[in-house]
Image (tube, rainbow over all chains, first blue to last red; front, side):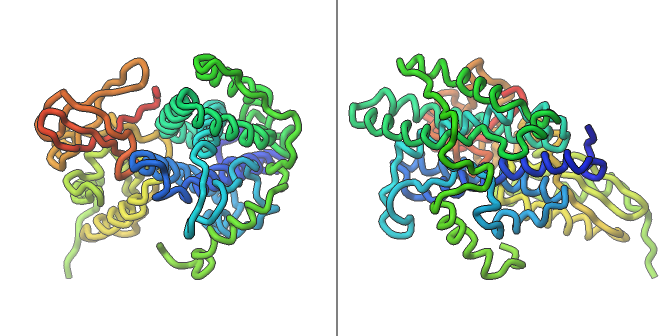
Length: 270
Length: 166
């Protein structure tokens, strides 16, 4: 397959565009939810780490949106800020609120949920990015190498939190188990490629969905074994599939907040 | 009327020595290994840069400063500055001079080696002691970590090692 956006067939371009939107929107929402934790994490080291990880992840989203811009999908900033919920392709997991309340007031965010979501999402991102390093679409393969390097530190960080809280006090364990259940309820579309599944898989942009799930489970196996836990099963059918534009009201609310400043003056340089 | 000679890649590199990391002003983008390629065509110049970390907010500033530095060259025509992802920037691109100047700023340069488990060690940026502890892998910027020296009792920073082998 070709390396230049100009010589792609229509079908290929559609598949690449679809996959890029999934990757970009996932990291964009993940970074946004992470940024809401700013100043609220349990201690200062956790705060610095989680804001740094959010910043990196926003950088990954920005890069995917730039690859989309290069394919003629529109201006990268507009793609991030202007698209309505039904055009978004992020997984449900990444759009969920951090907990009750609003970060500008008195939020009651759940750190156990943040740790479990971040860890399992980062592991999912890792198996995708590992596979994307061998993508037939060269610009994406090259970008994946870059993301993979940065992801190393994210995984290390969330794995440490995950292991420690899971093997901590009864209160911690109870909260973590509850969070794990919530996160897994939303995991059904994380490895879905949506309507372009066939095109994405046959053109070898990334390994197929089943392979991704198997790799994710295999990577988690040693960690869960050490904690004397079973790796949770990924739901067969998602309740809603974000890859097909199905979303919760959490996304609508997030989009209003996150695009507020950009909407004020879209041509300003920040 | 003044006439200028041809703008050479060498002259561009000379100019780029003065473009510093906006957050570490002792180190140039050349010493950070961010300059991938400089090409000239007539008096037009193209500079290809590698981003250190993708989410680094300093990238736009570096791009602008690079543009301005090259534009100051006498007789220069069109100037283009572009970031590319390939090859990926890795911390072993930082030059020896870069290592020296990072230390001057109180930042330990990135170690060249990793342990098998992915961990790594640096000596104190101030006193050189090896008796240090990692406080936080994440630091004030994406590319830095925070450590503590048990010998001179200073908190210091280290540039994170990044490698495609990770």
